[in-house]
Image 1 (cartoon, one colour):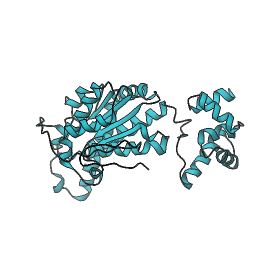
Image 2 (cartoon, rainbow, N blue to C red):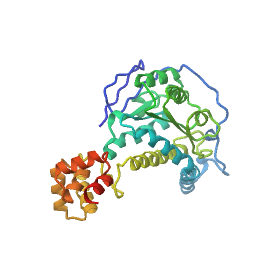
Image 3 (cartoon, rainbow, N blue to C red):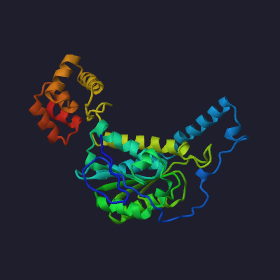
Image 4 (tube, rainbow, N blue to C red):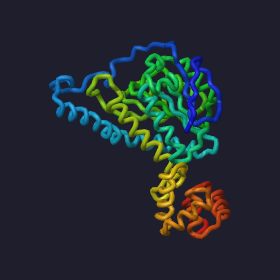
Length: 330
């Protein structure tokens, strides 16, 4: 599991940990954005607090469904963002860096922490800049999102450059912490992506690849953890998974680069190898045991390769299993 670093003076130690969370304790900039659609109240004859239980449930469920509709409308933009990030992340020293505040930052963090166990994406190549630091994940640090200077210090410590993909999330599209990160990232030559739930806002006009998640007014006015937050979670699920698929982390619909760290995952790995190769579970287990429970290597071994042959084939194929299979077995 990644270690979380938090420093109330907004300094940063580089330790190679999977995530770096930067503290932002003081408001240094205040903006007065125009009225945002996420701050308005979704239409209806009655307010939430006036609804009987069944109708309250139906109203909230319907508001969540707007997240899926927003993603459908943003399909072209999301695909463009995936393609833009993929081009950069093919490079061996490239990094994916998320930034956000409040719900958006916590959504980003949830996505980031899954990339290493699910796809074996190196910890040093995924960073999260969360306004307010680790404490913001457990307790809201509302003033932190306004601290643009903390954001600049945080990103500066990571020394961003052309091998970085910076993804900013802000439902409002106006969050100073996120905008400061994006501005500095662009100046450093990084590829920038922005997810916002409000149109024509600074975030979507500043980035290379804007994604508008038009969820409209919230059932609970201003509570962007609802439709807006759900849309961001779905968007990052799609974004990061599609990226890992294109980067060769998936083979025949299986997460063949996953880290096998417990009994459940051992059983999953055995079933995975058996299914891909078309062999029995005993042979799949033997292949996995010979390869340190590395699924990619085990697939090749189960098909008849020696562990050393499997290692050489994958190395020659840049770790992409489909290429290694063709190289060894045609």
